Image (cartoon, rainbow, N blue to C red; front, side):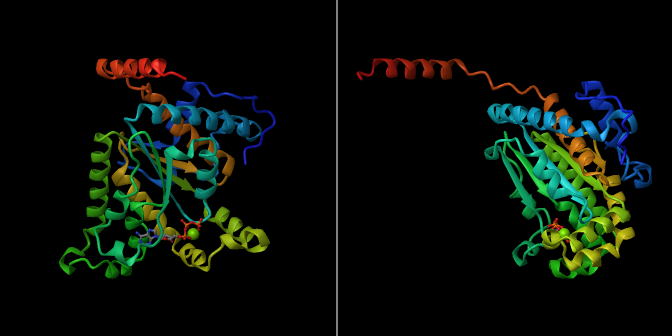
Length: 309
Ligand code: ATP
Ligand code: MG
């Protein structure tokens, strides 16, 4: 952890500093992308110190809350945040902290678990479509359509339960799925959905430490599932699958953020900064009323004033 007391007391990041920080982790073109270029314990060196992270995070959360109100009032754009990660990388805690200040009426969190029997009888985007955010809202996907190119790719036997025609299940299936996702996200972007995708990048050592904490501390026991250990054994295959997914689907309209996640405070800070930056770029003003709408308001005002009380 970069807890250097020599670090300057930065309580506020300027727009330029924030962009610089985010550019470090933002992937908008997957060509040549490799996870090796991203270190899970990175904390952007001297840009931020742990001591000031809480103040920065609180500032970011408050800024996000005010931007969300404007997003809701304007009622034109939708925001979709996708969270993907290995177990114990901190998806749940990040979602909880980042959303702590926002109006629950404008947010919907959907956790995607193993698909139900009904879901498996449909194309893989079917269940995702029903969970997309409406205009003015923020949608959070805790896992997502990407699982179809991650867990299913690592365990291809899962395909057998998907009722696909046999001739459509071949070597090309992963590229086809990734292309389908890229096209789907392009379509959503053209429909007014801002897409931000977060890969919480944790190291294998830190995952072990967090699993042991869950096993050793009684009040954290519930967070551990024996399946977590089974999946850990497939670590390298998952890393490959993530690399290929980011490679094929990073785009300017649907960037991936590869967030170093060995330090929870840093993960949360970068995620909130990314959402704030994306909302800041929009011109979030309530839509101006038309002449007819203004005339209706005037009629309502006169009617209220004319009431005898
Ligand atoms: P946590 O462990 O923090 O509670 P989680 O997201 O890991 O959160 P779990 O209930 O442990 O939640 O796991 C959900 C499981 O569902 C994951 O193992 C994931 O890979 C699996 N899953 C999600 N989508 C699919 C899918 N399309 N096909 C198969 N498995 C999936
Ligand atoms: Mg889990």
